[in-house]
Image 1 (tube, rainbow, N blue to C red):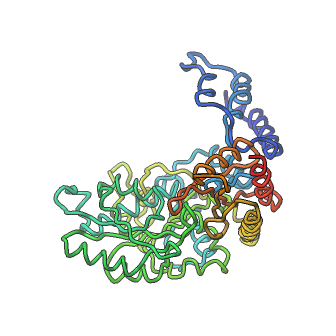
Image 2 (cartoon, rainbow, N blue to C red):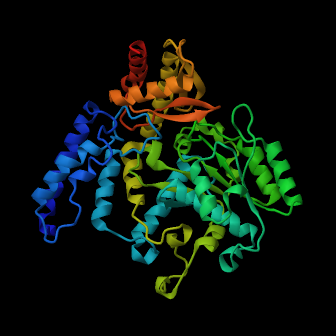
Image 3 (cartoon, helix red, strand yellow):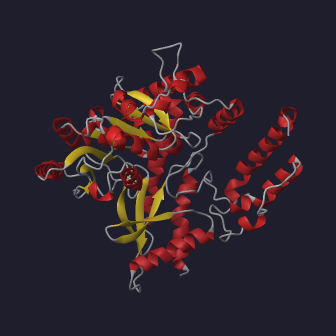
Length: 468
């Protein structure tokens, strides 16, 4: 294929995309193929000679759709949404066509400077202090890893990267059991060790106990350990729990520890001023991450990290051999020093398109609707016989379980119900463990979902429970 053929095939792809989204609500939300079924339809070896685009596209249409779980389906209520608003999709196509490598300012000044502008727009939209600097990472996992590495290096006077960790003692990071598993992975990758991720007890609302935190830090110091940092959550993945930030972040300041706030999902809701009480005290944080590619509508991947002082993270992660130096300018920003990756995609473009195409009020309206519809759905599900609501509606996330009168094990009954719901195909829900119970999560956040789509969950659950 040549560039001269691009118009024809991009138009063909656009036609397919338009039809895909027009008919997506008629498809089962989750793929129904069996393991290995798609793999068996793909040749085991690559072709020796070029194949026609006609053949390639025909195989795409024939093989791939059956193996897709439709994340843009309006009844996708599993995990957290990974949205793809149409304006964001257009920007992503342009970004792919440009193919810019934005590792340094000089490799494409527009990539860097639009990123500075867009993180500034989002900082203002979220009500964050103007002193925070922003950077676009690929995912919250990378932002958390960057924060953990910075915690480690600050605690070791920035000697860990140079001399290693073998003689440094036990570095301690603090979080609750509501923290995302990406923190566990970051602790391992950073060489700190899983046993040094200290789980702090929570109160009845699953928020970190600041008293227990202070006591644990003091205990670790007495035992010769090295307290390094604290990760808090706003809108945890399991049941949407949030830490009470202000007292925890004040302890961070008092103890000289680095703080990271994981608001990957719930951070988007902070464009609505009425929800900002959830992260009162956020201005005290050293690092904050939220994912516009979740609730805000940006095409995956797009995660924004805000930093109170980027110098520490740049000192931790920046590596500048001679071939990566920007010779002409001494005051430009090179974002490759701010994260794990050297190579960087043009992610700011989709934020620019998204924020302009829908406006903050349009995005707020969606989020407010999702929260309202989730609360309405919770109330309807609570009226279904033998359905028990197991966690409150936190923004647009809650959980429930199935407790039939004749069931010896509600966990097994709930798991069977979840399997039945997902096999039915009209919805897609996922599970979590909460208070030792297997429960079903409902999270409303798909960009094009409607009130009818959301309330259909109660109707389908009622129907499927009644036939069991």
